[in-house]
Amino acid sequence: MLALCLLLLSVLFTACEAKPEDTSRQPEASVTEEPPSVTPEPTSAVPGNSQEAGPAVTEAAKIVSEPLIKADGRTVAERFGVPKGFTRLEPEEESFAYYLQNLPLKPEGTKVRYYDGRKKTRDVYLAVVDFSLGERDLQQCADGVIRLRAEYLYSKGRYDEIHFNFVSGFNAEFSKWADGRGISVNGNKVSWNSNRRNDGSYESFQRYLDIVYAYASTLSLEKELVEKPFSELAIGDVLIQGGSPGHCVIVVDLAVNEATGEKIFMLAQSYMPAQDIQILKGDSEGSPWVLAGEEGTLKTPEWTFQTSDLKTWK
Image (cartoon, rainbow, N blue to C red; front, side):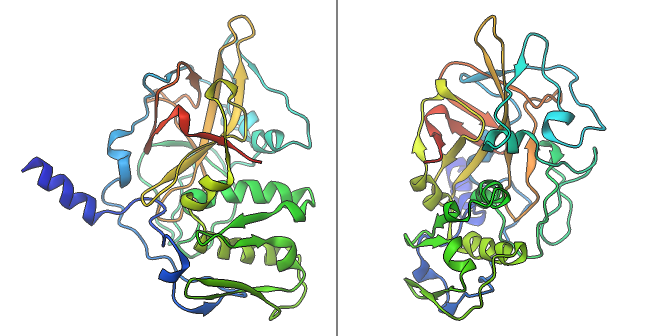
């Protein structure tokens, strides 16, 4: 009977990134400006494998718990201190790692909002990244990671490096979008058109991302990233399980104990339905830090990963 109940629950509740596995499941459309809507998911239960997850990390890591939150801090590095004996990594200012450490945060105590304005009530996060969200159910799991990478590249003027694959394999390049080309989707066929005017503005960049969110997922992002040993964990790396369901989180900060060589790291995510990007809790005591240990199972508040799920950008 228990097995039957679990089976029924798995049917009733889909998980993050339960998007189409190919564009043939999308309606025929020309998406030069507006992507299709993504059906909102229920929030009365935690989807996917997240019923196994929690704020404790087992086997792969253990938690570092100290009162480290500075309420007036405006960025990741300012808001969260490091435990005694650890030194925060100091990356080059132009790097992705530096960008993530200095992500702007909303004021202490701000709640994560869903795209429809509702507050996220699950106590799984410590801070909210100060980015716009929009009013459509688009910025879910992989999309939050894509957003961070794309925002960094855009801020540095590296437009040619902003490109993400749809699940169909189509490579959506922002440089072409900015040059006035739009994206047409007809069943499983995706192509460029010339239905737009040249526009590389930030507003146009956000419209481009909305289309990427609609047609990319953990399935496609996982294939774009490259495997990396957990022992080489670094800021900007991604823990990802592609699929429907699937999920991913990104490392946004890291510190090292020079005496022991131990690393502690901090994670951020978006989830479903579309919601603000958030800095995750590391434990039930309110620390953002997780101490990287031996390889194995790594539980985050809303998903269970394996350390072998670690990937990084090409």
